[in-house]
Image: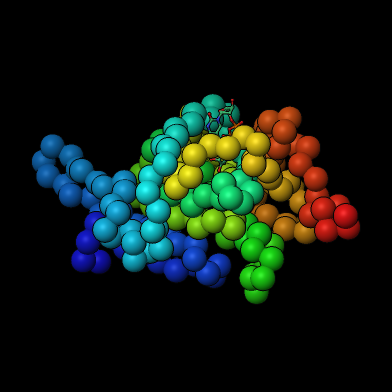
Length: 184
Ligand SMILES: Cc1cn([C@H]2C[C@H](O)[C@@H](COP(=O)(O)OP(=O)(O)O[C@H]3O[C@H](C)C(=O)[C@H](O)[C@H]3O)O2)c(=O)[nH]c1=O
């Protein structure tokens, strides 16, 4: 690992796991959460459009699985600042050999890992602790009119959440199933 990130492929093409190298000394450490030069080799070729932070209070909560339709599709760099989550990306690229495949990684305030999610994926996570803070770098602005999602409990995707889904937003509970969409 030469730079500040070790970039690791996942079974879903384009989805990358990043390990951040912390520069430590007696006071503590400094880590780089984003680096345009280094992350270009991980496929981040966009400007940063927005940065979001979320607090999720209860363990077992699921946020997701969200995406924005073209032309507002976005890449996301997702980092956990506090607590621990299973962070999941779902391949929604119709022509992908891993279409509807999912991949999850444990992100935590301690493990210096981030997930780089290219356009074409839905994203979500389940909190594995209480008081989870997540930090998102977005390559495109929030476009509510283009927002959509797939159900975190869709049997066609079959995400193996570690815990029972304890809490979801009304919107997340009511996304249509892939089967329903594809029947239209
Ligand atoms: C996504 C977003 C939302 N908002 C507003 C809209 C609502 O008033 C409020 C909460 O939005 P929402 O319930 O969509 O938040 P999440 O459920 O955490 O959505 C996020 O969670 C999943 C895991 C993601 O990957 C996306 O980053 C994002 O969709 O923030 C904004 O102002 N800007 C934004 O970029």
